[in-house]
Image (cartoon, rainbow, N blue to C red; front, top):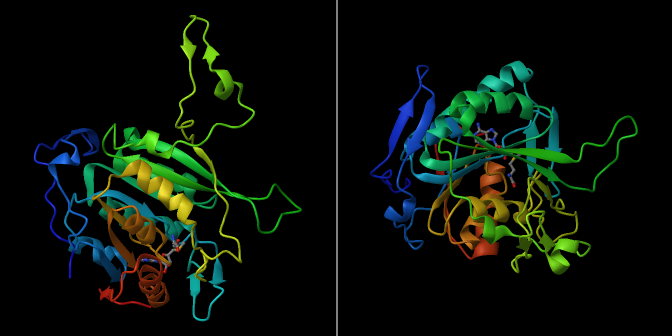
Length: 313
Ligand SMILES: C[S@@+](CC[C@H](N)C(=O)[O-])C[C@H]1O[C@@H](n2cnc3c(N)ncnc32)[C@H](O)[C@@H]1O
């Protein structure tokens, strides 16, 4: 039932500093690892990611996305029966952060040495998590802080409304896979550059790219509106558009994408539709049940049975 054992790149070499942090890492890109999307490497686990991760091959993931509990202190009700997600953290950030760090350290070992981890948090913990990730990957492992900006929902009268989440992208490699051209977006209609290009002081003429402009680190992607077909009823469900952009940009077809807090399975659905292999894990039975029905309804994958690991809740 476990993920196929995918060998790490043959030529990987890593240089550590005196504290055991990764200073540099060199490896062949994954062309050497030819994964056939038909191979049955897709797996769904129910359990704590801490118990699941050791069952998987080290250095086998191109991309791991983690959207863990945010420690919001709330129990979130979904729009369908039974789809409750408990984000009431027993304790405070002092207990949340070590919990998260222990898991991030284990997940880091599952990545190719030029793989990417994207951690999705909000204002409550993202600043602490960034320091933790600096410790795990080394400061040079930081690639981007992506701001996912959205509208909708209520507005605060006592402060500026919090309408963004933070996605922290780290890698042990200075140049992880980045398919910039695959996620270009149309130029703004008001962009003079898009209309006729610009001439630099040097006299060089820059033409707009017909594929659009590169995406920057602030992403305006709407949350899933309550009536959208995409909404499956699981609280905290993320938009497919968000996951599609991440997966296309940070992985190649046939490579392995993991989500160890997969909730309703948005990452897995996006990965499947984009021809990536996937491993999903969630501790909650409501979540894995939702993933099973989503993969069936949206991807035609019937008969997926989550492998149970350790205790679930
Ligand atoms: C914010 S939600 C993820 C939502 C998901 N990205 C989506 O689009 O539906 C966080 C998930 O982490 C799960 N979770 C909490 N602790 C976990 C653990 N120790 N191991 C695995 N999953 C866990 C929760 O059950 C919940 O489904």
